[in-house]
Image (cartoon, rainbow, N blue to C red; front, side):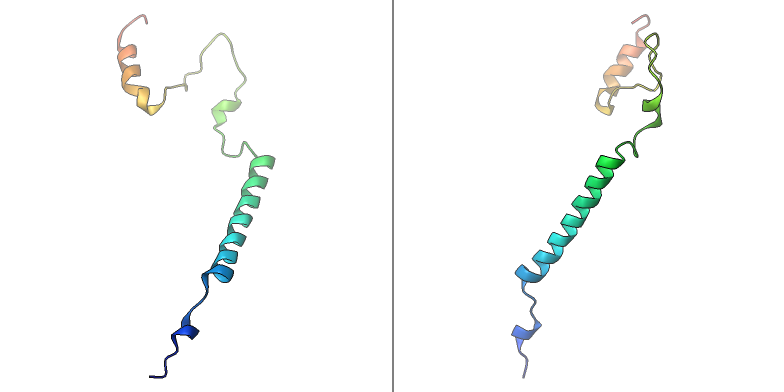
Amino acid sequence: LGVHPEMDKIAFYPYFYVKDLVGWVAFAIFFSVWTFYAPNVLGHPDNYIPANPMSTPPHIVPEWYFLPIYAILRSIPDK
């Protein structure tokens, strides 16, 4: 048939390995620069309110897996 399957192949090691390595290194550099120079970009704005030791902030709630227990405790008055 005149088909040479060896010519339709791209070797994994030099081509795809180096291409993926360059992508991972670029991502690592970008993520490191972003983490070290702008760590609070995705922070919640309530975390930047100055602390008041006399009152608990209203936005503090337990994690989602503690919410049923938290609801039971909130249903009992004076606790």
